[in-house]
Image (cartoon, rainbow, N blue to C red; front, side, top):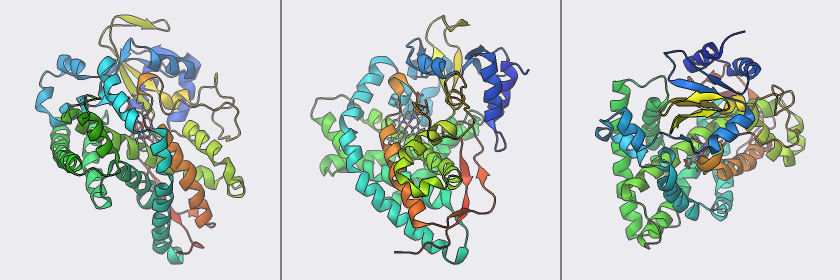
Length: 411
Ligand code: HEM
């Protein structure tokens, strides 16, 4: 049987052709958490059991990398715009600072606001499906990832924040440069320099937009955030506002794109869903479990401690494998079977504890509303050509998913 080191080494190598699920199955045979000793691995342990992951992410002994950790690890971090921007966001903050930022975002990004986005989600989906019908007329192949899976969440979060549609593709190009650096296999100095330039451009863009919304508020999240801060009821510096806006935009489309992408082959293989669209929420939960978009997170031990018997020293890094937790046979019967009828299906795809995904409700809303529209519009939708996988494991999905939509007609 392979050791934990070998399995995590194979997972860390990532790559397009990696199928992580057999590796996860091997890991589950070894327990719920493992100490790692391979010197080339950045992690000292991996947590992958369902209950262990849930418990670990709620354990305050383990923190996200924040400015204090950055200071200790990379004293020159202040010189890097991308690090300064990210370290000013809730995703890279702990304790009271995290609570302060997240509290403000929760105040304005409410369930009511998500609900108010529903007609917008439907409208955007309709528009994109019209375009797919045009592009695919006569049986031409259409890339579902580029034309729908990416554009829908990107435009939705754009509307939510108040970014014009025309700026979205520029935004994505910049965010991709930052994501290249965030991917743990590509952290060279050149990649960091490119990410720095992108962060500087995005910061400039947001600073302008914040000033515009301050002068002339609109019905969008940026205006609400600026008003909440200016009212004196909430504290957030402009740099923190920019850092959080960057993270929110990035976290929203770069994950939800893969919820849409990973869903499609599974839905097409399940004809019953066309006849029973009311099952879609259960399908969405099962896609989130069976082929989750985000597989790996990291935490750092804030003190010398232990987790389920594995000793950890202050500063040691732990890999949290949510994609593995969702396939834990101790929690899910026959975990490698796609089964939307499972009882008590609660994947850990949105994390757990203080950093639980801020946009989970929006992601679910988008998928539950838009996926039935895709199936409804294109009764003959079929996969075509060769799908291309993303070249990373942190965000697992398709880069390109060619389909034919023949039979659909523009409205
Ligand atoms: C299927 C889609 C999505 C998945 C799988 C996903 C997954 C996650 C996970 C696992 C975390 C926790 C990270 C950690 O603990 O280190 C997280 C955090 C976060 N997500 Fe999502 N997410 C999705 C969609 C969204 C959307 C649509 C938004 C925004 C509109 C969003 C905004 C955020 C933010 C801001 C955080 C950081 C929260 C914090 O640090 O307190 N996500 N997401």
